[in-house]
Length: 227
Image (cartoon, rainbow, N blue to C red; front, top):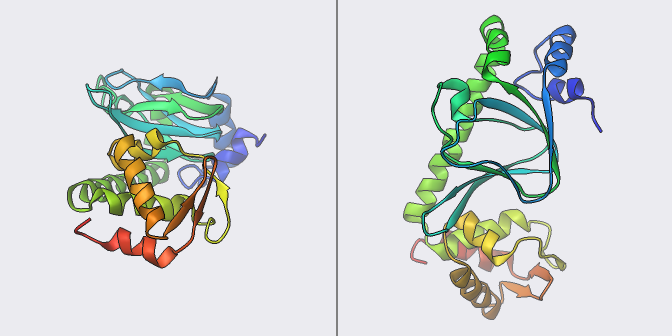
């Protein structure tokens, strides 16, 4: 396991701190381990923390009152995230956070990290840059949901997630429900579209394996604005 001080050194937000400051920051962290599928926070919670992922992966997700889910993004080891209440006191969480595999994070409360942010402007600057990147990601997602058909969104997901599956079978590590949650659709629609892609020769699907057989055709689905 990588020491937390090394994890901080490798992250752009904290990499400019001195070794002494990084060690002090590491010593003040609260470490938490979570089993697979554990809900770290729910939409509407007051959760005033910033965290860095040590191992596993953490998913930020929105859920409708009908139970439909939309996965916004997934944080991998070394990545940083925060609750809205970390910057705006009493502001509730706008997303739920879920450990989608056995995970460990290190977190800091607003009170413990604010002095460092005030003292080190570079940390605040890098956090602002990260916020802009997340806003761009959210904007791209909204644009895709508004203007790209479901078939295109699914094709994009397959091309990005299974980039190494061209010409060779790879393990199907996403369920229909997870695929649907990542593109803002339903498992039934995802199932129909996968069979459509298969019938047209873009992919081959087995129960536990998956292969991209025609990347150009799949890219055509992704670019087709008419669905």
